[in-house]
Amino acid sequence: MKKITIANRNNATYEVKGNKPLLLELRSLGVDLPYGCQYGGCITCAAKLIKGKVDQKSQVALNNRQINDGYVILCVARAKTDCTFDIGVESHDKLYRNPFIDPLAPHELKADIASFREIKND
Amino acid sequence: MEGLCCGPGYASPSEAIRAPSEKLLYTIAIYTGTGIQKPDYLATIDVDPKSESYSKVIHRLEMPGIGDELHHMGWNACSSCHDDKSMSRRYLLVPGVRSNNIYVVDTATNPKAPRIHKIIQGTEIKTKTNLSGPHTVHCLGSEIIISFLGDAKGEAPGGYLHLNKDFEILGRWENSMGDIPFSYDFWYQPRHNVMVSSEWAAPNTFMPGFDLEEVGHLKYGRRLHIWDFEKKRPIQTMYLGEDGLIPLEVKFLHNPNSSHGFCGAALSANVIHFWKTKNGSWEWEKIIDIDNEPHPDWPIPIPGVMSALLVSMDDKYLYINNWLHGDMRQYNITDPHNPVLTGQVWMGGLLGKAPIVNGVKIAGGPQMYQLSLDGKRMYVTTSLFSTWDNQFYPEIRTNGGVMLMINCDVKNGGMKINEDFVVNFGNEPNGPSRCHESRYPGGDCTSDIWL
Image 1 (cartoon, each protein chain N blue to C red):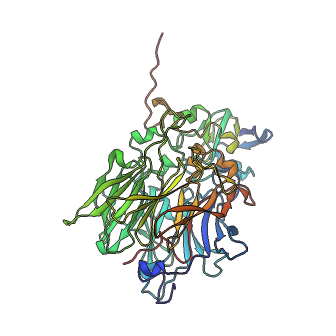
Image 2 (cartoon, rainbow over the protein chains, first blue to last red; image 1 turned 180 degrees about the vertical axis):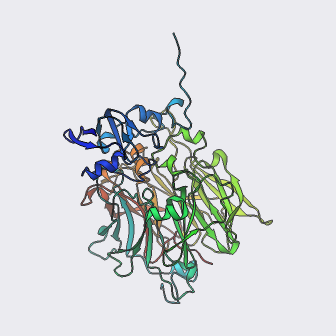
Image 3 (cartoon, helix red, strand yellow; image 1 turned 60 degrees about the vertical axis):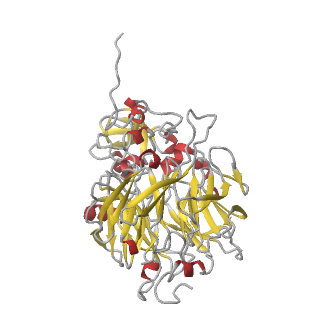
């Protein structure tokens, strides 16, 4: 079992098995979560991972900047360890960005079109 | 006048123009993506100036679950089956872009308080047709086709769902998608045996929000497609290139004999005009080009984002919006090669030209609009799509959407915002919602096609 803490819900904790998507597991425990497509494509259910590890390899909605900022698509992500999240739109402060004012670098695009970042050795 | 002859709609566009004025309209309002855990709903709005509840939401039909993102909708029947006594314009088909569900709404039993008649489950559509991301609904005679932007996994190009008049799934409508990379809107003109379709992007691309870089990576559309309507397959592609980035709404003139049509390229903020030549092939040209506008906080000028387009029933005026600039425009298209700007109004937008209209602070810009059959009253809403709203107009989360009405001068041209009409969706009982597409029970300027 994995312990899931929802930081922005008074640190409420839940025990999940980790063999199903977190959206399903948390909703079955009574957590009210936004969701849409339920296949990892639409971002409605995004939450911010503060601590822990998840497997969300089947998500296709997030670009690499959003992933680096900790976002997780709950409808497909499974908990690999105990995790702490902020959930709901209050966690979306970095999820949405004006694409003209704040463009993405090539390595920050979605995985299928991102280029690898050049790592310079001093 | 509707039903005077036999079936739904009107014998001709000129008969439609003489129909009585609308008294009600149905508008989609969403909570998906807003942080409010409530279902999206279909709002009934009183637009009868003699009524005490004029300019108010008088009924809300909530969907059974949350997270649909209701978006566009269409009728079960239109003037294309005007000769069929067994048909009536009674059911509104309301798809959820994210959930894939299609709600069939009965608007006839009690027009002020429509009710859900049937639900076509999104999972059933995926299983039977491998489609997701529903968008445009058109009826063709007594049957219905709906464009979908993706396959069941949200990848392009999607295709077309075919329903019978009892809303049962017949399967895929098209015989082939050819080499079409993306889907979005479509319109057909039966006397020319033609359908035209446009391109947004795969659901997996546009649903999470807009990354400008993905345009350069060819993740967004830049083509129009001409179909052999009877053979249900594409026959010609018009590559629009930089002139036609993200070609969204596509409309033919209402005159069923005409082959002239228009498409708004959202990111290029251009109007593309297309028509059939004497040898039967199709040509296109750019007829309107909205310049990007400088903004003190933006490193590059702001594109208009021409997300919708509409033709008046008399085929005299073309209406366009610039969602990020904040203006609605009216062009006289008597000569479709040479449109003439005849009207312009401002509401919201990022240029700061009209931040407050009729006492309401506008979050968003003019986005979806519907025009009365007589061409005189245009109802405009401000939300585009939940994730895109959140990127460009984050204040819409707390302010909600707004519906305004524009009085259009059909004789001399011109537009003026009606000072007596405003529906502030920021004041909805469950919290600020966002309004999108509208339809009028008796028909409007995007619901009818003539055979």
